[in-house]
Length: 180
Length: 409
Image 1: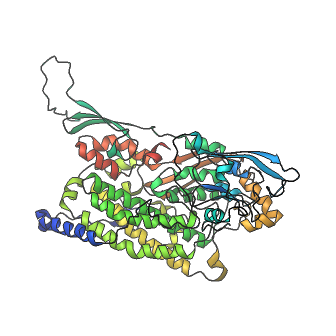
Image 2: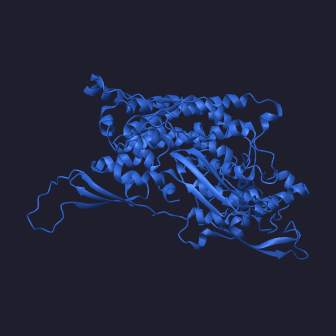
Image 3: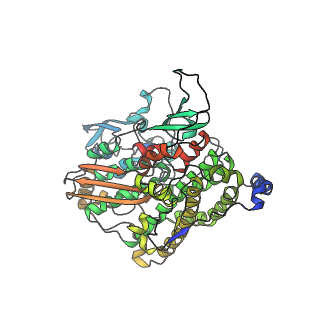
């Protein structure tokens, strides 16, 4: 084959030298490398007792956010459901009634909000699509269940604890994740 | 062709077969994926092989026909999942080509860094798995922790490790933060030592050489006829590299070589990939240096200025009406997309990954085709393993860097 460019560089493919053919020195060299690894710092993390630190933008399980007064941010605009490439999000909107102002931030809210975790691919597009800072991906991951039904998360499973009534649980759920 | 001499002698007039049929795959631990091969075996030697595709076909090309452009990125993640950022970037660049978006230089260089990191991650897995398949497990374990460093860099930028969905049309979703650069510096400092050690363990090891030299060779002519690209073609001696022949993402600004082999056997493919990792490290260093040279406002650019296709900032969406309108339009896939036909290819982890898109001006592609290098390599697999030993078949498969997810799309 003629060369197509000036940049090609052949890889070295020398035949084996006598030392390499004897093989015994290579065995010793290999053994010494593997032996030296015994004294190196272990890179493994003993999960689940220990966990490694995540980046602040880690894409884990979803959380439906509330504002400081404990009202739900979601207005059921449906952008997250539109943006979802896995078609995992379903919602039903309802209108806020008189006297529900302390529950929902806007006049419209999601009466039903479901994410099918079996379909979800954790791409983060719902978080990006949300214009109300209502859905975000937390640092929790690895949900497990014995029943498929339980992995269709309803609104109650997704909602962040109320900062008014459970401030500690709220802070924990928020974690280190800064809200964009 | 010479008639194969069978080991088993049958009496005259017997209707028994002299060969054994062996199913290698579709779920076999040695095939690293869902590959089925129906091998006709004569003792340990392979008389003929029949390769099957389609066990994890997920109809990505069809799915893409009813998705807006930005939702196709997670599909490309799942092609070659060892180097998904390259697939993501390739897709973004295809969209940019169709939409006529010009990316700033800094975005190009950031992309180069991510793509080269992905290439290193891909090659390091492929090469160490060749070691595993020829009986050297420890090398695989030693380099795995350095792939972890690469994955942590992805995680800082996009929030995920394997199926990255990194970058957006026009640039990146967020700028690289200080931790990312710190992690990159750590990788550049630690990885060369590990790679050197990796070489020490395998490159001139007699067992490894005996096992791989002469296994599954392919001539340059045959490789070209099959449509080989990437390291597998370069191992046969053709210096074809998309990064040099049709530079994308400002690859023309970088100085690097194309390692080429001679015979195209497993050992050559290993050597070519190994050398490519060194070249990739050089490219990353050059790109990092170029990025540090940006001053002032330019040093903060991480996306092109295209409000039609790139999502506005979240603060603006919450407060400004115009940003909110663009936000809704982009997410709903209602931005104007020109009609046309576009092909763009990138040098993926294991070859030329091409995207052929026809747009009729609708919200999603009219037709999309992924040129998946694995699919092409797999067609040659039967020829490569013919007459080889069964153990070589496994080594040849991993040396081609076959990824079932990419092969079946």
